Image (cartoon, rainbow over all chains, first blue to last red; front, side):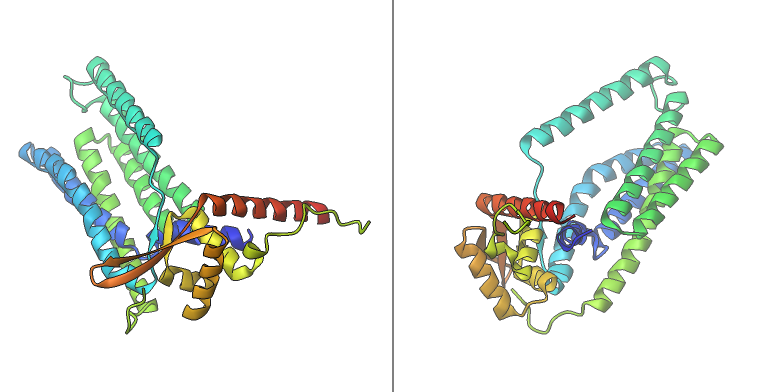
Length: 209
Length: 101
């Protein structure tokens, strides 16, 4: 790999260098996953509603928290990089793909699900499929950005998916466990990365422009 | 005939290592600020400023100044002309490697 490609890779991976996105995203995932899991265990369905509300509110809020923390911590120490936003046509394609996926899942649940819920065979297949997909995505990210800590998240995700598969967990409980473990692992790797980053890059006495 | 036939001379503006690094950063980012570019190029503030001005004068980058809270932030972004020049430079390097391998 030549110096141009090394520089480009470092710049692409700069977003993850401080661990802030992992830390905040991990907290949000855990806050959604734990009530989801508890709802399935206790039968107290209000908890899954709380988890759903949390998902709607927490994810946009966590993006704002990440930006705020990066402005305070990262940009003053090692600088600011703005990444290209997806074009409108790409956004439309993503929205269409998501819509088709949602319709496909709804049809599967209606045809083969248990009483139109995600519990049952369809839910189990979705649970294992989504877990395996996440593990693969983290592995690809770890290789592309040369960030070994992403392997830890990939392994944790794969392990939970395996446990869910062997235990035959229902969708709500299994997905809650997946999000909770994924969140907890991200919090740990993110926190360690952030501490290391701050130690390596002390705040400059005079803020650079 | 020398026996070495390359695709012309390299673009001298991009050929300089520090400027090449700046262009490499901006080829994958919408924009990057002065602090980040200083870290990537290991240049002093003054030297980086000179290199950025050189790229700006060639029409390869745009420089913008903004305020984030009370702190000023100077950012650089690649122009379409800069993107074309960077691509042409990479093609030149590829042809050079092909010709010498």
